[in-house]
Length: 158
Image 1 (cartoon, helix red, strand yellow):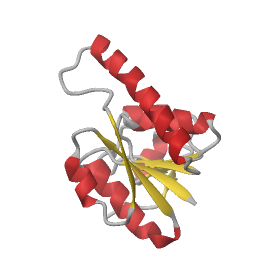
Image 2 (image 1 turned 90 degrees about the vertical axis):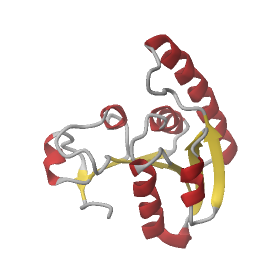
Image 3 (image 1 turned 90 degrees about the horizontal axis):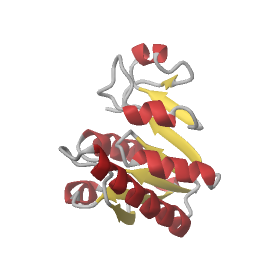
Image 4 (image 1 turned 60 degrees about the vertical axis):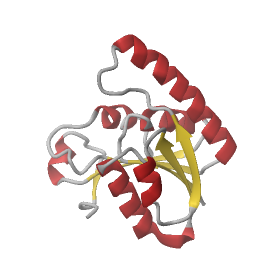
């Protein structure tokens, strides 16, 4: 089974790489990394293709710039899904997870989302969007079950 793992940066990457480590060698991995995020790519321990896309937003971008960047990210994500043909899209919530998860769902892929461990009482924007169509949606704090009733609490990725 091929899993496309969306790496954000910082905590998002740490959580996903921890989960990949727990999942082990039985899967084939493809990694999605934001352009310019060399640190996330360097931290990958389990081999797999690395796909690079532009981010939809940088801090300080206005709404118009963000809109056009999101369109570019959507098209890049479409290309990644069509070329790599993953069966599952796995993410912990960076903004670039939304378009690729939507595209994956349109193409019949399974979408697995892990709400960030930094979210204890309030859901992330990405989580609120992806929750509507995710096949599996995990929360890392029991308090988040009141935000995401269908969410699965299985403890924290540590």
